Image (tube, rainbow, N blue to C red; front, side):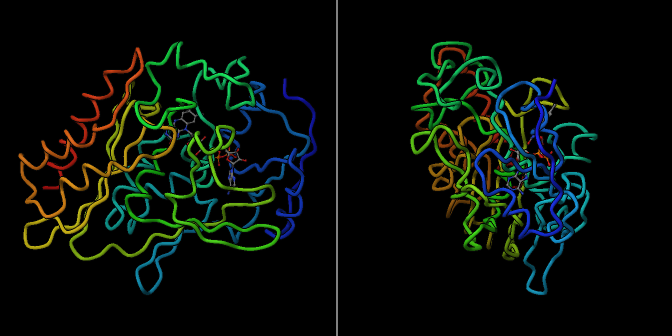
Length: 323
Ligand SMILES: Cc1cc2nc3c(=O)[nH]c(=O)nc-3n(C[C@H](O)[C@H](O)[C@H](O)COP(=O)(O)OP(=O)(O)OC[C@H]3O[C@@H](n4cnc5c(N)ncnc54)[C@H](O)[C@@H]3O)c2cc1C
């Protein structure tokens, strides 16, 4: 049973921001994550602010300078099937297509995918874990086969989104509207590491709404992809994944971003792998070096050491696929 709450449908973004002004109000986009959390008692609310009717938050457009704009209410299905995204921002189309199931992709929005809550079974279960304001991460000494191998000093959940790593690999920015100002942040800085604050996943403050995501036109020669490994071949979160953007000029890597999923509490830049790639020819030797570099600094827990090899294989495959 869902506990009782008020349900409002604001007529404008401004009104939505006002309605969200109290900390016990929550934003409702497609509802595919939010309603499950409410039903399972992960958190409560006094008021849901349903933004589904706000046309200004939808749509996907490509500007004259090639910048891609995706409204926060664009669905994952719209993103996965958009011809310009498939051809020029391929990692993003693949990330969106690999998330959840067809039904969920039809209902789930980009904003919701980026702001969804963690899937850690302790966070979702009856545990007053650190992320819910308690003082312990139960996964550290508990069942941790699905948990983080990087950046898990305080809380070892993994970030669940498949679109976030792809967008960061493509250097996306997030537009945020709030009661005072509208601001734009690199998507990489949108996510909060547990060491900074284990109770929140994003920089959004009370009353703030993610309104759109902007992705710059890819430079000439840049190609990208997203791959993930999962237990089931559909409808499952990443055990490990990689978004790779690679710009090759005259046979050598000019610039690159390697962003990992399923292995850290935030989408994780594999900086050492990027260093191994830049300036190199894209061949089997480089792929193997980048793969080895991608797991530098990994600190597996008792049950998730397999992620190190899995990740290394994914990165090697990804580089070779773009060779
Ligand atoms: C069975 C299942 C399998 C899944 N598998 C995957 C998977 O493999 N990969 C993957 O990436 N995802 C997966 N998901 C997650 C799914 O993609 C998300 O549930 C969906 O994208 C959320 O979008 P929504 O519009 O329904 O968000 P909602 O449920 O409406 O919102 C989710 C959260 O984001 C907040 N929010 C939503 N929009 C905004 C906004 N514009 N600004 C600020 N806050 C906002 C809400 O307040 C809420 O806390 C899965 C979900 C389910 C239920």
